[in-house]
Image (cartoon, rainbow, N blue to C red; front, top):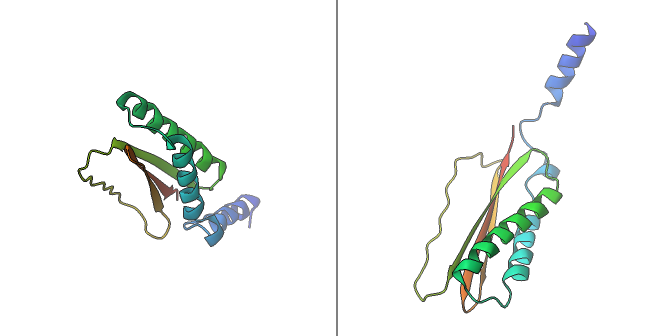
Length: 128
């Protein structure tokens, strides 16, 4: 067997289609990050339409950076933030995605006070 064939065989054997258990999307840690950032940024805030745009961006950016710092190999993630005013009516929130149930994951959390509500969802997609 030549050296090139040996290296090729090593590459084939090391290619991983599924993440190891220790490398799976860290749902609990991501949820903790979301909870901490929502509380930190929105605590004692009153809804203001102009400020809400900035808060939503700040939440998305800080959650995104904290997830990057978790260093989850071979995962891409999407951070989605919805922030609104409590007006006494209900609100429905739904997200859909086509993915691999064994590898991909998502988590979300909700912050609410007398004036506003915020839902932050993070999708983790494994890159094959």
